[in-house]
Image (cartoon, rainbow, N blue to C red; front, side, top):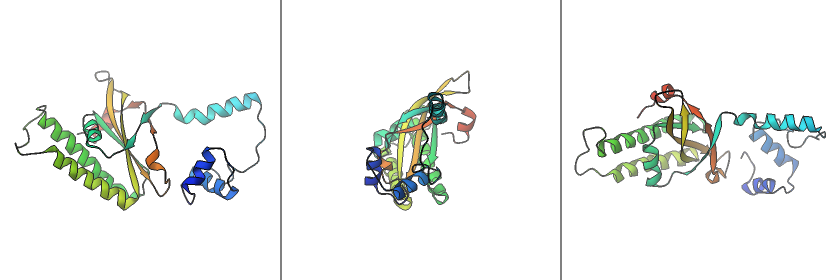
Length: 208
């Protein structure tokens, strides 16, 4: 998080005292007013407290919590490549978009090649082809992306509702690219929030 150490964030999580300056920086990094965590609060009535609680969780409407982990294993790649569609969310600067598009292409290619190897579509790869070589190339691109942009790629899969009666559900691959500059603890995130309902039309723009 901007100009705030990981240990300071941990102290806040434990409810320990930190300086007003740190709280101001945290509030700004979260997109809140600078005095959001330091301004005096008036005690709310029970009705006001309930209304405030409802407002605070309103952003979760239509979203589901998806378990994620840093992309480091071939097993994760196989799971991503076996889904119906891919959703990529980026918290990186605009200059990272080219590398992100390249990562999507590598994952799309992995899914296509796995389908040909399984005989789902043809022709099959040449006899000497090894999937591990493709995985290695993808991980090389990912390593360069993460180093260049000080990022971590969190991945997971989930089942979502769709806008199609013929195909009412879909397995979705989630890639969330997080900035370590903004959040030094980004690699430790365990979940992300994703749309409960997805659109096949939107997915076809990036179909495998």
